[in-house]
Length: 315
Length: 211
Image (cartoon, rainbow over all chains, first blue to last red; front, side):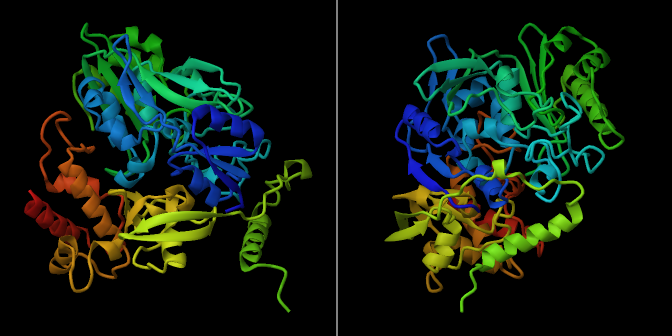
């Protein structure tokens, strides 16, 4: 690990200001992804701003009946919060399908959103990777790409976003609140947080330099039947091959969002007006670019959709 | 005369060179503009409550909680397996919750209460989970065992608090202490010897005693 200096921030804005003063700084919360990347020298911040002591660890109802989740709420606490279990079960399910209990006890809400891909070529510093080293090429394309993306990819990058939590938040139409170094606050739809790689896969979000996520807000409960189905190579503690957050609304309509397919949580609202499983799958998978290694993800996606429409819960 | 190279620098450079031989045609060398000046190693004081005793240490900011325990306090019961949060051998309890001590910095734990395997029980006064692991032969080589035991203690505490898991059928009802629940809750601890069935028997027994 490269050397860095360390400071403990005491408010969100102070943290954002500190980030502005140290252009090579990183915020650290749970640290479960960042420290791993620092050990590999994939991330080499010169300064760490510890945001664990700035508050923002509460879950509270909003005036319009929604739920505001502080950026520092740990994954375990979010998954087991009574309000989430009762009214947003797809979010509990997605969180509990991710990582291990030890990691969920440490990992935070904002950190989960900002975690980086587990593409093996991003992690292997002896290989080219446009995300890790812009312009160096992509060793994943044509390499071992079985677990990589088929939607939203580019010639430069086929990495997936690894979060389960974010997939559930996408289907719930979550919004993300931030504070900038100058104190300016804004809210953006979760759908607008992550970028597609295009020619700049190193830019993963639309956050500006020093901008800090302070909370994630869920709209008022949708009700209905909510499931999170995750298909993976082993039954626990593995990233998704394909995952699906599905909600059958009280009026019978469906919503779907997918993980394991794309560089961001993948939702195609246009697919939700279709009622026949093949039509839904066709719209969700429109534009998919798969290889012989990843064709199976299309089959899995179609089967997950068909199962949800039939009322099943394929874990 | 002492070499101007530290072992770490030598290892890092030689690993880079080896990689370079393989990948030299694929990866261009970093341009000087990309080089970022890293600060010199910075040290910070941190006070930890370790197994009930207060310890103040002066640590390089890079020191993981795991390395602080093993290399600075010489509590070597906590093991370093993968050092990347994948195997669970380094599991300790921080403020009562189990975490991977390899993926957290010691300086981030000012004032925290840390319980390691040495703090759970002693050879003369074993923790019930330690006794159960012995009774059920819940290990072979023993390397993952301190992490398994700390994790199991954390898992039962989570069950007691009603924290659900991936296999919990009803998110709003009571959670049964089933083998499926325990297996899922301990999936973050890898045992290369494959002592899993005996580990689950040991944890099931303690869970029954608690219930």
